[in-house]
Length: 125
Image (cartoon, rainbow, N blue to C red; front, top):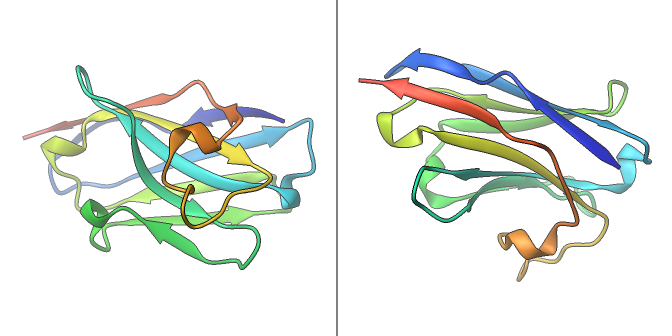
C-alpha cells in the first residue's frame, strides 16, 4: 500500500489542523493505521493508532485528549485532528500502516511496514 500524507502547515499555539493520509494500492480495511511524529533532532515517536482488529484507537500519553484519529474506508483515508496545539507539537507527522500489530508493538515504528512521506506541522507561540 502507498500512503500520501497532507494537511500540514503553520498555526498559532492553541490552533487546530487536520492531517490526512490517503492510501492506495492495497485493501485499506485490512490495515491498522498509525501516526508518528519526528521533531528536529529527536527520534520518531508514536502519536496514535487505529487498530483494525478491534476498531479502537490508542494514543500516546502526551496527546491528552487533544488529538483524534478517524478513518474513512470509503475514501481510503485516515485523519489526524490536532487541537489545542502547542509549540512542542512542531514536527513532521508521518502516517504508517500495518496488517498485523499487537498491543505490545503498536507504539513501535518498527511494527509498521508502510510509511507516508510526512507532512510538516509548525506551531508558533
